[in-house]
Figure 1 (tube, rainbow, N blue to C red):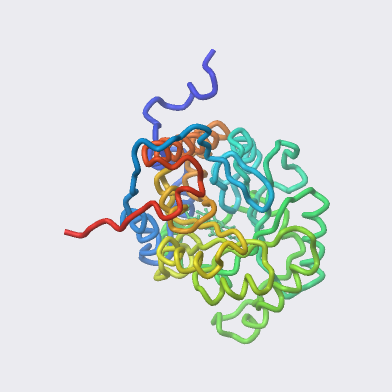
Figure 2 (spheres, rainbow, N blue to C red):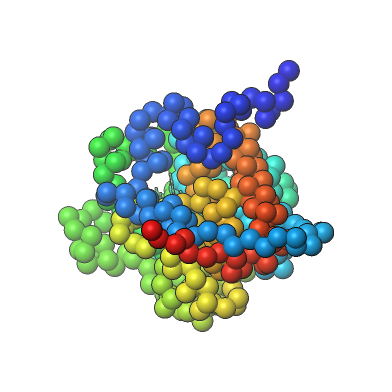
Length: 362
Ligand SMILES: Cc1cc2nc3c(=O)[nH]c(=O)nc-3n(C[C@H](O)[C@H](O)[C@H](O)COP(=O)(O)O)c2cc1C
Ligand SMILES: CCCCCCC(=O)C(=O)O
């Protein structure tokens, strides 16, 4: 009998191999939703290209005794700095949906952030797997709805909230439009039941639409309703980071939503150093967008991230091989990071800080 990992095709050795195989496992419209970005997909491209602007500065003959990729985060400890980013409706990509992702994540000790548009209710998620389960949400003006959802998440044992602040409207997703993607009705959204409907408007600048959009005040209200840590995801400016720290949010995710909202935003990696400098260790800073290699995580940590979130590659692996694929993809990332740490002479995650240099042009 084959072991789980032997079921993975032999030529899947890097995350790009899952990306190559995933379209064979998915209908074209779902592939377009998963792999695509907004408009001309500039954001999608710059996210990955930003990592190619940096090389690692190694040191040789470093004492590596006791080296480890352990992450210390807000008093807790994780085996590595990889989180699974919140992504909608995992059942689109694999019949076992978020259950499979959670098992794969737990096998590798990676926290999973469930999307508010998850296709599995949080109550059905496996708990006591020894890894944090977080939940991502959008803040709506209807406080009764928000409170109900937050209490539900607390009762289900959720470990933290990630409020996404960069998508007051969906990006203009031309690839999805061309492929005719729509969320199929049978893919349920159990956390959106009872959510107030958005007004049907011709223009997103219609006052009825704008009246539904959250402000800092709404987020601070939400934060004060719960003991759970509340992180903000989608911050790209120093001013917003400063405000988040002043308002005592618990952490930040520097993100442009994987290039899926506004197509012409900066790559998160580009703005990470200035945001990290501003935050100055007062709260943790994560980054996502374009991380495809352990060396990308190394570069992100060198430029000021405490940890990283990985999006699409996790769903490519889920589509190809379910829970085993997710665990395998995370294993690849961890192995690549550990090899990079050893070859660069960095025995711990904090020792990675600053250990990159810009790639010389020409
Ligand atoms: C299919 C898909 C669905 C997503 N759904 C959500 C979501 O529900 N909430 C959210 O905050 N971000 C969502 N994102 C954005 C991710 O959380 C993350 O910011 C992005 O994928 C990171 O870029 P990467 O895919 O290059 O790693 C989604 C991304 C993808 C690819
Ligand atoms: C209320 C529905 C939210 C779906 C969010 C999906 C998303 O963020 C994406 O990038 O796709």
